[in-house]
Length: 129
Image: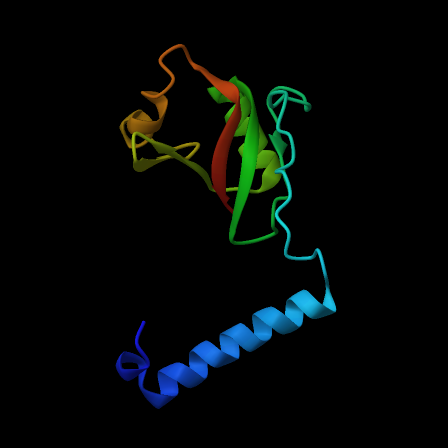
């Protein structure tokens, strides 16, 4: 790039970036070298009991958790045990919610995602407490 296009401020910024890059290289040789990414082998495994959540549930607000699988009856019990009002998840690019105790039509978009009545393990959910 021509120095005429940068102007004085642009040239100063480029000089500063180059100076910092050279200084970092001099202070920590090898620190800027690329390294191989960590190997990612294996699969996620469900490690907690069915009908429970994994993750920390805040005393109020919203918590991101993982459902360990189970039925809607188990989900209702787990929500009550956690002190949560509702569970939310993303389905086909939109948010759907399940709120225990409300009429079936309110929870229909959520329950329609699991026609067999069982929510698989490793399902990410937001809990509203």
